[in-house]
Image (cartoon, rainbow, N blue to C red; front, side, top):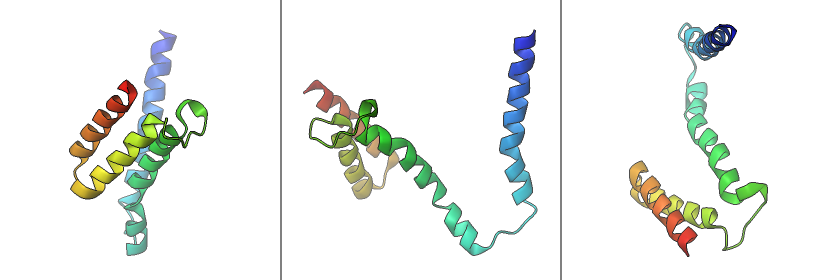
Length: 103
């Protein structure tokens, strides 16, 4: 029973932590500079998640041509730039990664 109380309690805490900025920010009008800066948050977060895995597989910096993740990441970056399509980027990036891992 204690485990369920802890799980439910932590779920509520997490919910309210995520909900509080939404409730607070809807009461204020943000200026245009802040709105424009907030547009870059998803890109910054995604970059912070992807780049360490791309350049440091296994926790070691690897900038050689033997780093399949880095090579596939570059292909995905090129596909994203050319197509501007998330589905094609993920699909071709994963196919490239699997191909490099087979070689």
